[in-house]
Amino acid sequence: MEPIRRTALVEATIHEIGVSGTLDVPVSKIARRAGVSSALAHHYFGNKEQLFLDAMRHMLTLYAKEVRRGLSEVEGPRARLEAVVAAGFRPFNFQREAIAAWLNFYVLAQTSVGAQRLLNIYHRRLHSTLVHDLRPLVGDEAPRIARLVAALIDGLYLRHALLGDLTTGEEATWEVMHALDVALAASTREQVAAPTPADIPDGDLQ
Amino acid sequence: MEPIRRTALVEATIHEIGVSGTLDVPVSKIARRAGVSSALAHHYFGNKEQLFLDAMRHMLTLYAKEVRRGLSEVEGPRARLEAVVAAGFRPFNFQREAIAAWLNFYVLAQTSVGAQRLLNIYHRRLHSTLVHDLRPLVGDEAPRIARLVAALIDGLYLRHALLGDLTTGEEATWEVMHALDVALAASTREQVAAPTPADIPDGDLQ
DNA sequence: CTCGTTGTTGATTGACGGGTCAATTAAAAA
DNA sequence: TTTTTAATTGACCCGTCAATCAACAACGAG
Image (cartoon, rainbow over all chains, first blue to last red):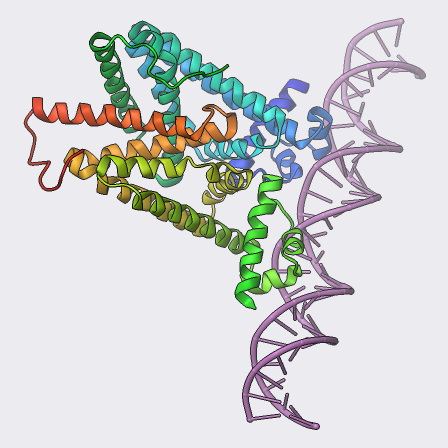
C-alpha cells in the first residue's frame, strides 16, 4: 500500500503546484487530491519540503528516461547531442506542472541543501552526457562547449516557458543545434589554425 | 512624506526577500524593517503583489541604469554589445537580494499579469538593445542572434546564481562574448559564401 | 478469537498572515 | 483659533496551515 500512496502523493504534488504555480499549496489540498488525509502525507514524507523534493526527483527521473529513450534511437555524437537537446524541449517539459515545478525548485534551491543537491545532480548529469558526446568532436573544448549548450538550454527554456518566445520546441532545439554546430566548426578550425589549447584565462576549479 | 515611505518599503521588500529567499515574507516584517506599520504598506501599495512588483520595477530601473552607464563608456557595435552583456553579470546582479528577487519574479510571472508585463518589458528592452548593435554586424540575422545571446545570458545567470558554475562575472561575460564572436563570424562567412539579401547596409563595422 | 502490525484518519493545536478600519496625531489652511 | 486634510497606526477579523496525536480499521499469524 505504501508505494501506491507515495506515488499518488507525489503526482498530486506536481499537479497542485502546476495549478497554483506556487510551492505555497496546502499539504491538505495535495493529500485530498491523492485521496488521502494530510496526516498520511506527513506520515510518509515527514514534511512538505521532503514531499516536494520527492516530487522533483520523480520529475527528474522521467526526464532522464526521456533522454535515454532519445539516445537509444540514434547513433553518432552529433545525433546524440541533438537527442539530448531535443529531450529538454519536448512538450512534456513545458506543461504547466513541469514549468511550475522547475521554477519553484530554483527558488527552493537558494535555501534548501536538499534542493541544491538535487539540482547539482541534474546539472552534472547533463554536463557529463554532453561532454561524453562532445569529446570526440572537439576534444578538450568539450567541457566549455558543454557548459555553453547547457546554459543555452536553460535560457531558452526559461524564455519559452515564461514568454512563449519560441513557438515550438523543435525550433528551440534547432536554435541550440545551430549554435552548437557553429561552435563546433569554430573550435575545429581554431585547432587547425592556431594550436593554442589554453586561451582561457587562468585557473578554473572543480 | 509619501515618496520617502514608498522607497523605504520597496527597499525593505528587496532586502527581506533576499534574506528569506522567498516571496513568502510577512508584509509586517517588511514594514517593520521600513520603520512603518504594515497597514501603511497596504495603504500605499494596495497589496503584497503590488509591493513586490514595485520592488521589481525598482531593480529593473537600477539594472537599466547600469546598462546605460556601460554603454556610455564605449563606442562601436561590438564594444557596446560587450557592455550590455557585462552589465548583466556585474556583482550587483548576483547579490542574494537580486537573485531571490529574480527567481521569485519568474515564479510570479506564471500567474500574475502584472509580473508578465514587467518581464516582457525587460525582455523587449534587452532584445532591442542587442538588435540595435547587432544589425550593423549581421544585418537580418540580428534578431536571431539577439535571442541567442539573451538566452545565453539568462542561462548562465541562472547557473552562476544557483551553482556558482562560473567563478567570476567576467568569465561569464567572456563566455557569452566568445559565443557571440563565433556566431558573428559564422554569420558573415555564410553571407559571403551564399549571397543573401542586402545586408550590411549602413553603418560602420567592428 | 485475540494480538500485533500496518495503514489511515479526524480532530486539534499553536501559530501566523493578509487585509481592514476606526481612531489618533500632526500639519496645513482658513 | 478653528477646521480640514494627510499620515499613520494598533487592534482585530477571518482565515489558513503545518504538524501532531490518539485512536480506529483491517488483517494475517498464532
